[in-house]
Image 1 (cartoon, rainbow, N blue to C red):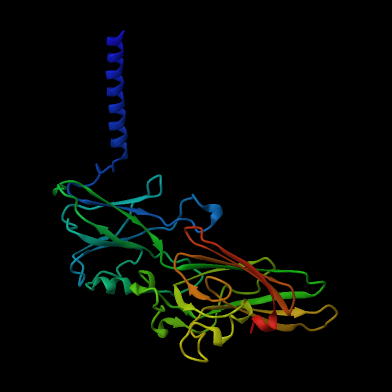
Image 2 (cartoon, helix red, strand yellow):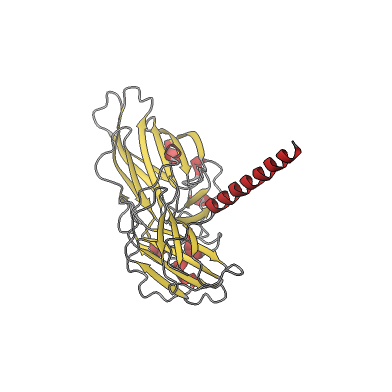
Length: 367
């Protein structure tokens, strides 16, 4: 009986060993499709911005990709540059795999940068790592969704005993280089009065997008640094009147102006509480949205003109930053010519949310 138990024990150990080995093999990266000694870049689409669509795959087309490699101890110019002029279909999990041969990149301690959908913009680029992060592409419209996606820096350190023949997978989680803003409005408690939004405008919108956050600058740096990179003029968001419960969506490069000191939402529009350093110009370059409309009191023949101005940012009082990769969703409930209920919800890929409601008099909050 003891002998039989020993046999069973030996068989059980062997079976467990096989299962462990099989599990280990399944957990390894599949590099069979990579040329010998080459690199495989696994591009992951950015996560959905909306909570109700989390888990679904994005559909941002990737038409071309640049990959640049910089030595860790020499960032003056790229060590290697590779351009994928076309990109194949994504795998079932949404990942796009781009393979290179051994000569494309070097197996040394370095950093990789992956940039999608800039065409030949980097064709002759020989700049430093800082130059790459600060490089910009133009924004010609606010109503068409941009396609600029970037990843990096992606650190790579050769493993001991790696040799020169094994395939190297590099995971590249792409991020949007722009912000998305959705604005809608609705009537609230009008008591027979009538309100029409005739147009929606936005001002202080960057006319460029940097490849990387803040153009590679530090957290305390305002970006864009050059005021000439910001369109200060009011520009229309869509055309024509905006129906009750209607919405407008637009896109823009990041505009990071910093934090102000307003004690309430009613004071966020006041220059003295803005994030700027120059007195009487502290709100310069801060992005704001303006709703222009007409309001007709019950029994009145002619409407009066009304205008609501909202400075955008990460909260309702002190934040004037529009960050890349975020969705800024504004729902404005207008209850009359003299007051408005403003709700702002902001989410990013990590489902960070801010949600506040304040009732404020129009003449205090809007100008």
